[in-house]
Length: 547
Image (cartoon, rainbow, N blue to C red):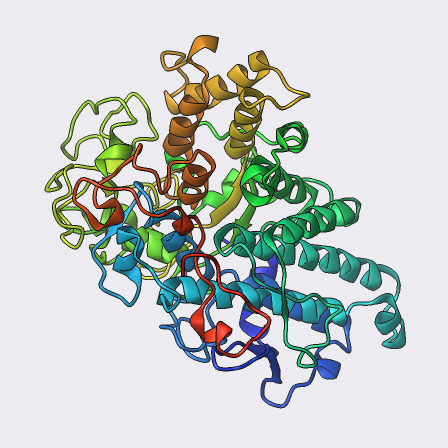
């Protein structure tokens, strides 16, 4: 169930910011003749505009579940941010295959995408769209403009927090572009929209910008666990910094595991904790996994909030709940009216877990597996994938369910209440441990081991039977543990690239490179191409190598 800003998303579409692939620049256009001056004339208007900034992570347009879509040239349901991000991060790896024949989808698992791929192009424009929303909000939130509009005191203070959060959300989307596309076009609130064609920024320079921006807003954010649920706070800034530093070697050629340790430890020390039962992580009332959301323990650091009645769309948790349900899987167990028989996982991921106690339906959702994170569906499914587009080929995933902790269905059987964490505490434990093993200063192996065993004790239902010792704590173990803990949460492509395994022939999975047993692909596939539509109209852009 959702809180606060998401309640007013339905009235937040006061500014329609559109991106089209056939334009040279981002275009800000008033919706229903409502101008920026009108929207930002009162403190309430700023709150509504900020709801649009946050809402664009969960919504695809101004008329849910479809209508007045934000992104042109793509099916609106597909244009959801996390659906696009998940497709790029998961369907390209050993964690997921899907039956769908939608434009661009099968090219992801076969690793033969081009500069016209509908999914990567959609993500590119979605991220730029959300950056534009942030830039517009920031342009309207300067102290001088607030004063000229008579906005002072507590109202001005609140808007200053909004502005810091907008800068964080912009930095997050620039991280997405840096990680996936490397060298995107670059605009900030200092850029007058429509006045210039955006210039390209190098990956290394964008890395420096993101780090600098996050450090600048750190003291400006609401302190950890004190903001409204679904709004970013200081811990979200630290979490993104930790993630960026962990991948610094990939982004810049120079590692920075010391800072990854520093910022992951900041989050770990900030009054967060694991919930007791892993199988309750992705449910209709998973707001209870956050202190700000009403829970006793805060595992979720920053979330995209969904509500089956208020944020309707065909992406996000709706996609992750419906797409995996098919075959003999009963929709009622997932709190939905029907499934879409789409996504499954591969033997590579299933085999990272102990063998299940049963493979029937008696021990849902994890078949009595000693490791409770093994939320898989076996009946009617084959662990060996012989055809990516056949649903029974591959193992089902039960991780996302539109039911509450008590088993009650969510508020709507089609659209889901499951919030998606962009950051949660276990990632910080894993970043700390990996960074220590890779030589970062400021941490130690004993502490790292303790963090990993904390995760594994929770995974094993409170038992220490799955705990490891220091000799077991290797970088390979961390990669495997990241898959066990974080699978289907949008990490795998980035992880495999950091480990040098995404394109390599030394690690294969079913149909990697379009071959049944898997094959290597060229290293240029570590980056996605800039969309051909943008290259055609922006002479400042140079395509990534290999495309």
